[in-house]
Image (cartoon, rainbow, N blue to C red):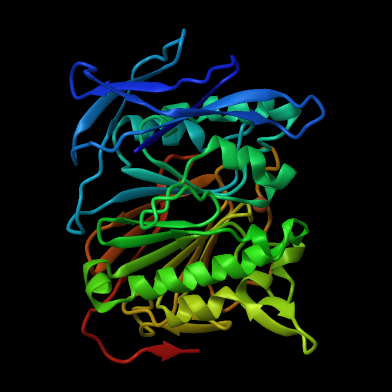
Length: 401
Ligand SMILES: [Fe+2]
């Protein structure tokens, strides 16, 4: 577990005091000075403490402190080890500091211990760098009731782009489970029977920071997926789930949903023949990714199993049983000052359900064979859509249309 916090006062020392009852243990971390790229060149101090000696399924209490100041007391419960349990995951996208419609319900559910972990796939605060980084400070303070209690896992969105994603890079700490290295742009980890991959769609769009990062990430994704697909790994963790920001498939009325060639799906043009390379759809399909979460569209949309614009349902009657391609889910409706975005009148064949309401996804990885996905409305606080993806179930052959 990594505890990350920031202070405005210069501080070079970071500690966390923690324990299961008394706060009997102390761990020293490290601190870095972060200078925001805005005209004030405002400085804040980022502190990170790694807690490595934790026991699974145990509630810990903790406080952060430095030379002069001490935080209030927080708590978290460590995740269970191994693959034989059922993680409960919240998936949110595009959550702003203002008009954060889903936040009260998310905070309530987290305080009631309804989630083990949260994925936020891009667009934070609107924007972290605004007002010389003060919006970033306020947003991190705002999500503290969530992020201090459950792992707050991230991938970057377009709103994080300013100054080469520096506010995003400094304010979060994503650790790749295999390499143990920090990488807020792409990393993977295991939870219960699922292998989770977070990656950046933004590398494909902000090539002003270089295009080599597209290739670097692609190679990493390829290797990570190859390892996840080793028979012994896939047997232990049959579910492979990704989360990134800009969708491969969407039917919103914004321009990006109307482009014939989706750059994340099909890749960038390279060489004298302008061949498309580093497209992710082929990679995800070949490596049997089960679910791809997206955001960016301020709405909720789920697909049928789809590849190359073609629906690959498990069967006509039971599309999500033994699906033959990834299922795409857009969860970009957490709420922000840009409000909801409209859908096109035309609903494509691959699109199974579209909802225009604030909310988020709650996903329960029930077993190695079954996942429950529910769309929760922040307006009514009810589940307004749900479906189950099942795999390795004996059935007749699939349906393609
Ligand atoms: Fe976005």
